[in-house]
Length: 169
Image (cartoon, rainbow, N blue to C red; front, side, top):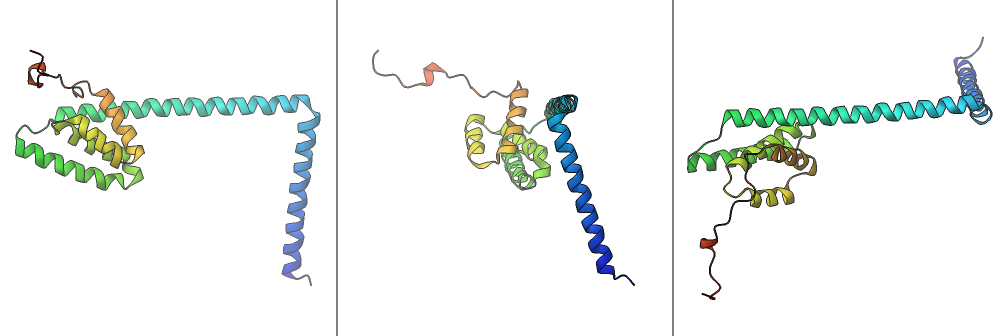
């Protein structure tokens, strides 16, 4: 009677031998057969092209999603009163911080920070704060949202009459 361990050992040895034989066969063809090498290179280039196309399609879809989310947020509107803006800002910053902890909720976290940015009186200062405190993956999506939104004024016009004079009158 043959023991189970002997059967398992023989099966493992046979599988290892078959794997080794295939590796030797593959290596021989890779070295000796020019058409095999050509096919390998062709397949490698095709795979790289497919990956690049997928990355481009994924980037386009991400931009489309960002545009859709920003458009929806703009259509929903923002509060106009000072107290409502302050509460809206605090709620969305807190929501953004909670969502940013979950890597699968990057878009939602960026949207919350974006909405807070829209009601903040000096958006450039808030962007500087975000740059120091918010995770890079969320910050990248937020940057795309800011780039898409043309109504967001990041460079407020400076009124020259408000600046102190240098005394050269």
